[in-house]
Figure 1 (cartoon, helix red, strand yellow):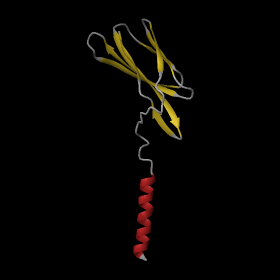
Figure 2 (cartoon, helix red, strand yellow):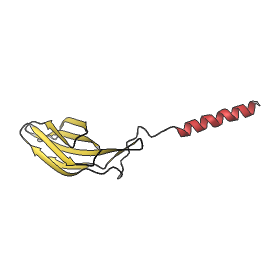
Figure 3 (cartoon, rainbow, N blue to C red):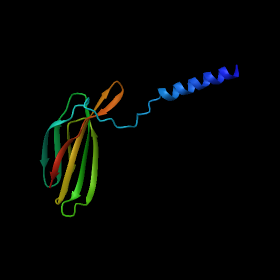
Figure 4 (cartoon, rainbow, N blue to C red):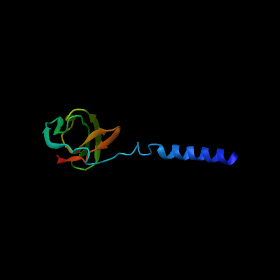
Length: 123
């Protein structure tokens, strides 16, 4: 009886361990999330704006790396989670900016990120 009880407990523990969602903290990049398209950039002396096209129901993660254009030293990194398809961030003269945006699609409780739409280096 003792062996049977240990066997049942072992089976329950193993089943519980393998049924847990072990990948809930892993970023999944997949073509199932449609990549943003049609980028449009607007630049002024004090702001940088980007727009893109995405699918209905998607949210987005916009990332911009601001560097000193003369020394290439990183000044700031901006990450914005948004439900809209545009962002505007403040900039200063003499900055170079590299940016990207990823779409986020939720399917059956899972979160999928698109391949990033990358903008070129902007001075």
